[in-house]
Amino acid sequence: MGDTIAAISTPQAAGGIGIVRISGKNSAEIADRVFQAADGQSLTQSSGYAAHYGFVHNGKEKIDEAIALVFRAPKSYTGENVVELSCHGGLYIIKSVLRAVLENGARMAEAGEFTRRAFENGKISLTQAEAVMDIISAQGRQAAKAALSAREGRVARKIDLFKNELTGYAAHLAAWADYPEEDLIPVDTEELSAQLADCIIRLKKLIADGDAGKVIRDGVDTVIVGKPNVGKSTLMNCLAGCERSIVTHIAGTTRDIVEEKVVLGDVILKLADTAGIHDTADPVESIGVERALDRMNRAGLVIAVFDNSLPLDENDIHLIENIRSCPCVAVINKNDMENKLDVDYISDHVGKVVFISAKEESGIDELASAISELLGVADLNPADGILSGERQLNCCRDCLKMVEEAKNALDCGITLDAVNVSLDCAVAYLLELTGERATDVVTDAVFHHFCVGK
Ligand SMILES: Nc1nc2c(ncn2[C@@H]2O[C@H](COP(=O)(O)OP(=O)(O)OP(=O)(O)O)[C@@H](O)[C@H]2O)c(=O)[nH]1
Ligand SMILES: [Mg+2]
Image 1 (cartoon, rainbow, N blue to C red):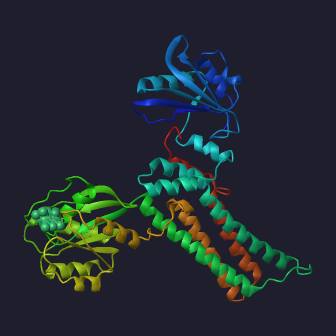
Image 2 (cartoon, rainbow, N blue to C red):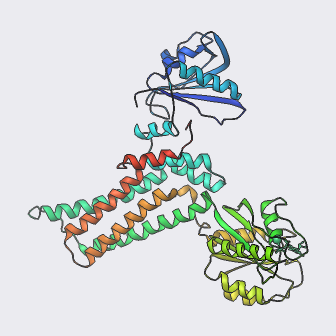
Image 3 (cartoon, protein in one colour):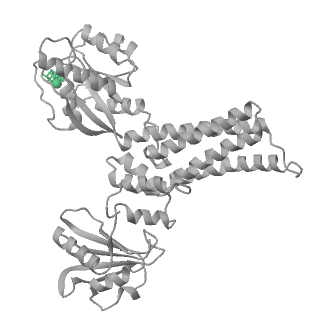
């Protein structure tokens, strides 16, 4: 970690401003070699949080006008000395500035290396580091909120509370088991069992919220299914806000799968419009039907569309039988037309039913609410600190398993030593989650996903 690193921290595209970030012990010295402040001030002599106007050059060649921002360790993103050179955002200019910095003593930063240094210098926990990546890749309002709250340490603080609670129980048990001659408050096994039961409920909620959080962060694979001509493609286009799928009055218009990512309310849907499901002799259409069924079985959410203007037929009934085990919303489309559909039959078999007119774009808010409820995000408060990513969720699931084991051992009257072993393991998983006891393999995996410049 002794060397000084540099990278372009803004996107690799033309823009108003481009930033080259330099971090490490010698960042001000290196910046001084390429940056000449208009007032002659040397950056090594500058105080922290100071901005200087001047020019960047490489040897005798003047590259661009720039502002140099100086941060002094430990008050910087990485916890090291940092200089950020803000130049004009042309690709050629910004790459020339980076080249000048690299030729004058800095090393090219690896992906995520700035954030890794922030973690290794104790500026942020591993969950906060992961949140930085989530902020960059957030696609919706809720996802951005969740990432920001994690960045502010909400997740880390929540995990700290669990950690302190479980460590407290373990310490009491250890003291009681190891020093029976001391005048310690006896362990009340019934009370401890109740406390662990309560902890289990809270851990399960944290995991459930994390699972729901995946929907706002990464989106959910969603398939629109139904018999031909019910308005699947019209719904797809209505949600996508553009003419993504071909719509005609002819049954069997959609043959292949058409995909589009859309934000509906707070949820990101990775939508797939499919061929109408029915018995068909047409070989092309039947491949489309097979693909639709395959997608349906793999989807995280099924939007099953029915035609309000037609009586229920065997294609509809067959579809209802097929979707029973999937998380599913039944959409009664063409609500603008006279009702001939047996809606009661559908609501008896599918938990959530929503009336819409895809053509007139009505009922879409109700569809959004039904989907949010079904996916468990309706009551999710993204600012509350939600676990992000499989790594965090797995640590938490492993911790839960250990707390459950500890409670079982306690309830079965197994020695307190054994209970304590499980509690210690539970705490170890939480330490892995926050990065306080993460192996290099775990840390490498976390930072592997970062882009250069972060
Ligand atoms: N009145 C009315 N007509 C609709 C509505 N939604 C779709 N339609 C019409 O229904 C017909 C079929 O619409 P599509 O969206 O192509 O139906 P689909 O389910 O994708 O059909 P396939 O791809 O053939 O399976 C078109 O003529 C649409 O204009 C609606 O809400 N109200
Ligand atoms: Mg279609």
